[in-house]
Image (cartoon, one colour):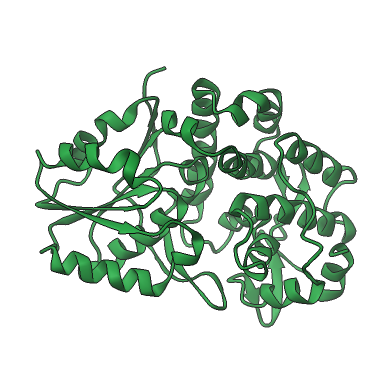
Length: 359
């Protein structure tokens, strides 16, 4: 299958089957350093950290730093501990941070790199489908607070992204489904033909087939980097990548992160598409088509009955897209196209309309 390399504007994304065996050499070539700090979690580390650390040893001094897996550990406390560990390990401005793990590790390690010594390089080595096609790209880093997700962070683009699709075969089934939610989102916001191709190969993708997955990762990366490069600081078109995330993040927070990120995004996409149809932004049938493909992927499409509309609405107040007390949403016009709204790429929606879809 070979390695596919995509120019992300300032850094490259390399995708391949078995690419992990080349990680060390590619890290050293992309971000040469005197010391390398590998940050991973207790799920990924036991499988993939040791060979990477051994191979990196040929290029410099290596330290290893472990975090407990799970969104609930993506906090300022974890950030502080990791930065202290890097100092204790003798890391300095000539250090490259290596993020080996899923989205939580990527966000946390990226934030460590963005702030350590006022910024050192980071190479993202995502090990989940969601991280490969979303979290590792675009330079967003950060941690969660009691008020919501990713409310403290920084823009810090990676020196490179290295994705080995073979590792996805060992992911739990629900993790592969979760990652597919973001791929489906990319099709909805930008490429109806891509969404149709996901639909056609859904069984192979859910099973973790390397060939089908490589194609999906590559196309999703192309879509995301195109959108990000047009609007790095998220003042316009990049907001479209937030489709499903305003209500999705609210559900994550309100449930105490009991659901996977992709599961919450799937629910959020259905609800936000319902909003779009309700206020006349989306064409009739948009909700039906989005719901159909999400259900084929085995993803939830209804928010938990244990949540109240008030809980969800309260959580949206802390969303980064809130302006002057009103929550803004990235809404589809139809599958493959988002509402531009005079260049704002988001639509302010009142609580009454949101309550109407939270039934």
